[in-house]
Length: 93
Image (cartoon, rainbow, N blue to C red; front, side, top):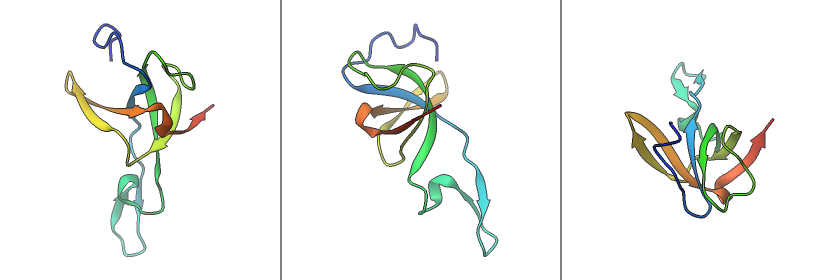
């Protein structure tokens, strides 16, 4: 996402781009994406932009976030997710 597309986010909102999901095969032979597995709640993403009050993460950080949080936002045919700072589980190094 180009920085000129979203200038200012308010408060504790973060725009993230989810990483491609790994596909796993179940015991029965079904292919399951991480988002369809009950045993995985966190998903990986890269932070694209942060709100004015965000203190924990910065643009470019890789994070794990709660997969049930946020909402989708489409900009230039790319789907981003907008979450709150409190939905970040960990910052990856």
